[in-house]
Length: 119
Length: 110
Image (cartoon, rainbow over all chains, first blue to last red; front, side, top):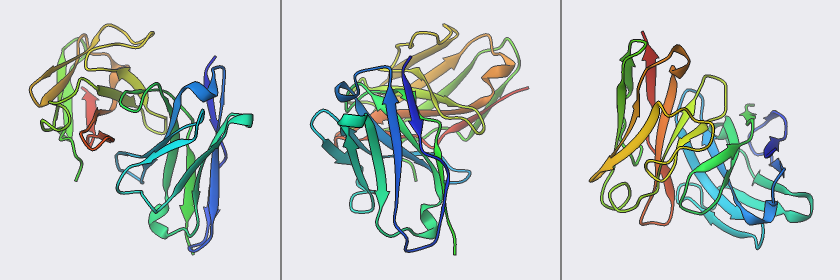
């Protein structure tokens, strides 16, 4: 059974750093893209970027380039999303999702990680 | 403002059919057959319902169908059921080598 299991909810202060994770199981982790999606409170979905764990090829959506870092450790089948300096506007639910290609749909999703940034 | 335009809300009665539109441009919806549709219930992760315009993943009821004409893609749900009440999002590959979502449509089953 394909599963993406994300790390737990986080509460951080502005300016702090954070790294959240997404562990894949039940499939060949290095053969599919993993993407990250932001959903701000009461708002819609936004693709942030994707990574191919097989060779760490990473692509960022223009709005998120330079704002976050996406990485992966294929030895433990885990993808990461990290911030070096959080802002209150980073408060959102973050989902990881598996994609077969860079162009197509995301067929499996993690349960989401809620990040709250507040002073 | 989202790259793809969806109606904010649609509604229908049980058993009826509804269609949700997703309008883009020739640089996204109209230019590629990489339109997907997702269903999201409150507090849950999105679920893929349609990929590559009209294909259903295994396990998705055939009441859900997708199509495209020009720069507009559509999701049709026939035989509406109470459990179909959710938010629906379209997405498309773009000429900028990214995938973008629509703003989302809230489906209410009356």
